Image 1 (cartoon, rainbow, N blue to C red):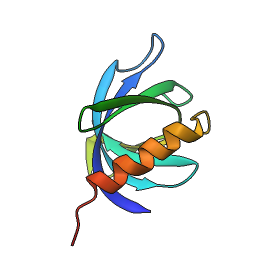
Image 2 (cartoon, one colour):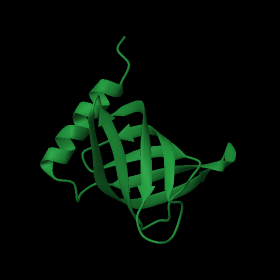
Image 3 (cartoon, rainbow, N blue to C red):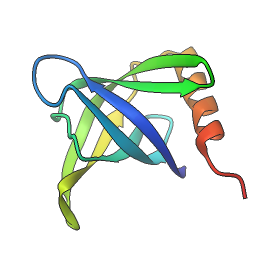
Length: 104
């Protein structure tokens, strides 16, 4: 599903950027694509921090792709796999994206 929503990203471990902010560009049952200026390292574990009203969740993901954007050397397209998420976390993500997507 193609969408545009914002997301906070926290790198886990001792390498890469500690925290970042990104624009969600696409979503599937197995992963999420985002655009960010603070790229994590491929293979790194990250936490996606999302909130709906007062409910804040941190969802686990693994970085599977980091590619510099051709149009900007300071921004990256990042692919994350969230196969480690529980069904409850996937349900929360689905609700987050529904809330974040503009209605027309």
